[in-house]
Image 1 (cartoon, helix red, strand yellow):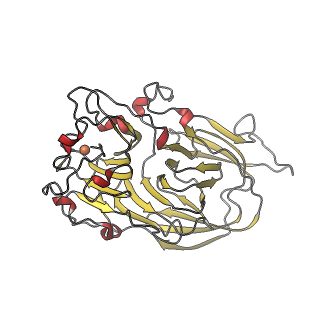
Image 2 (tube, rainbow, N blue to C red):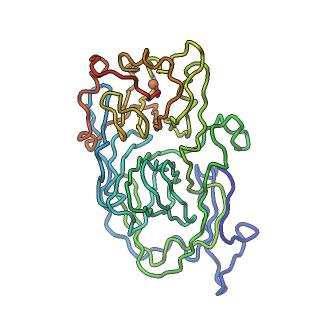
Image 3 (tube, rainbow, N blue to C red):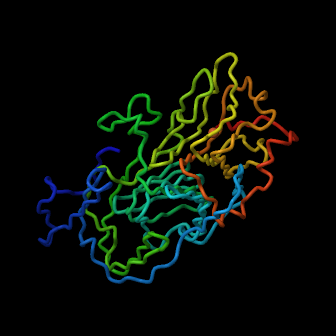
Length: 397
Ligand SMILES: [Fe+2]
């Protein structure tokens, strides 16, 4: 990340910074990884510690399935139009482990009448369908179709979406979501060979300083519960902030693909890193250009990871059973690869128009009970039957 600031801040940190009435603004340091990670300094009108009421916590979260058989798995969520009433009710977690949780979310309501924060994880919202704004104390952040919206833990926020289709893929991470280390120099700047750079990262653009009094409900997610706090002032009470820690958007459409003469391995698609998992973007690109190149991927044994692929756009309808909004999980311990006939049919293809998000985890994922309604029971056998074979444009691993 890089340094950014909005609003008014004093010239020197940890010094007197006074409001028009002579009282001090309330400084808050938001630091990650103790005092070793990135941080920001916030200036509030009210003490961020002051609460009006604590309501009863509400149980919240998925139930994992422990005895799911080792098998290639396809979850078809393409028919989903809504998954619940509001942003939190609509979160359906499909896979999870100790490092991350992967959910879909298509709320009926387009705005939230409460604030929310995830106290135990960073969140990445991939906006498959939707357009709107993320509102947080750091300011307004415009959200567009195709954005990854990265929200560090403890950022208080609410979302407002416009009418129209709304489909979010949500990845929660127990460790910080970071840009890819090998693409950064020793001072953190993204290097020339990075598929994206700082210009592609969009920070909050407009600070909101809300001096409204009243009851403001904040739902805080932690350890299987939503903890409900009531404040008598708006959480959007900042007059300024600066630092490296802030929510941002990065569009998958700004990811510049890395291509080669022969098949490039999945790390060229890597977009983010976190502890024990990575997020990759498969975007429209030219296929391999060696005269004997095979655009379809080789069979692959991912001996250390589970691979989840979310199919966003492209001509993958030709792949058996896969539709826009499908997920596949190719677990570690089994080889996976192209469907029968697709390797020969891929030869000579010049480009792909696919758009997909991959989450590779280095510890096994558990399916949740919420996922069962989307399970395609025929998928594990889909490499066996040749019927109806056509070239699958999805060139993902
Ligand atoms: Fe793979």
